Length: 221
Image (cartoon, rainbow, N blue to C red; front, side, top):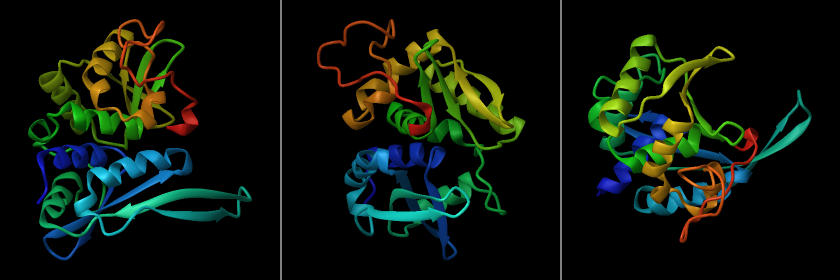
């Protein structure tokens, strides 16, 4: 059984770093992969989706002959189930390109989904108090669909900007404050570095009970 909370985490993960692999005509599995720096975050996902997972996260080392460096990351995947097969048909076209489905407004409704998506693909810039969520090369129609969903379901008004040939959602300071108020309760302590110290002023003393801390370098995104 897939719970409501698990569905919300899965939606956020699909929008973020997750990859759906088709298995048969109707099923698919979700593959999760994170860097060594985000090892604890992958374990958090694993624990949240534990009854759906094939096995625990595994440590993998890969040597890049061009850069002559060894990279370490962690990987795990779910069992193949019909729900993920349906999501595969929603979020991928026939060529395997990730897309924003027409029913995204019905799928992306939870702040938890929004939080996971941000933790996967977002970055908080402490210098100007803004957030960028980096995106694949969605079509203009898909980008507008995504922005409309954020406006309708969360009252957020990000702008679409382009960086190095790829689109991203830009949240200026005021929109970042609104975003943080929504997602802060769902951010696990291990990922608190991706959020500002204070959801209102983005600086100063941490609120009582808060587990967040200042943003780190973008290469940990």
